[in-house]
Length: 261
Ligand SMILES: [Zn+2]
Ligand SMILES: [Zn+2]
Image (cartoon, rainbow, N blue to C red; front, side, top):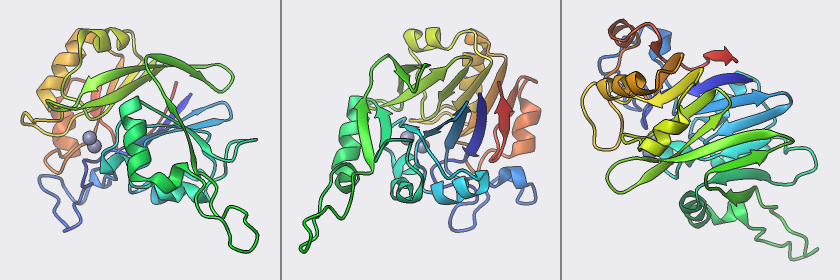
């Protein structure tokens, strides 16, 4: 399994669109962050988690032109608004649409917000043939599921603020927990014995919808993954400053980082 960090930034990226770098040293390339997303490659399958607004440039840089599966964590704009760029990618073998997985809440929200991506809509007046094929083939998931020949994926719900949830995913020794500030005992149970955990860490200070540094470190004490990468990093979190603060097994993610498990 190969994991590529496509984006490690908060919802506005770093720098923000107005050029604001916050506490981040603009001379360190590891502080230049696109919106959060990861690519997982298992044998010939390319699995994309979320379609960030930076998807086009992320896949160009990773030299990826084929996606086989998409896993959605939730429907927020910074995780979904690159959806339209999927049109130009190679479909999985034998399929016209990209299989995409998410909680029933996420899938129904995506269908409402991007209806054209799920339905064959307009027909040509002359030939009556569809002008637009559906882009996505949605699957609502709960708990565990299998994709491809034998890729076993565990999913679990995570609190993302007081009234909302995101979905975390685990494949083998890898797990991804973006956009969360509350992990239930059941979720933490699924996160035991990890080789690598990529986890939300938005800020130094407590936040209403995201994890902050000390909260992540307390989760790490409970589940003790071998290696922890912090993601969804805001302009408050400078790479070197954050790395110096954390224990050796915990480090900030950065765009383009590749891990082979
Ligand atoms: Zn987000
Ligand atoms: Zn979110």
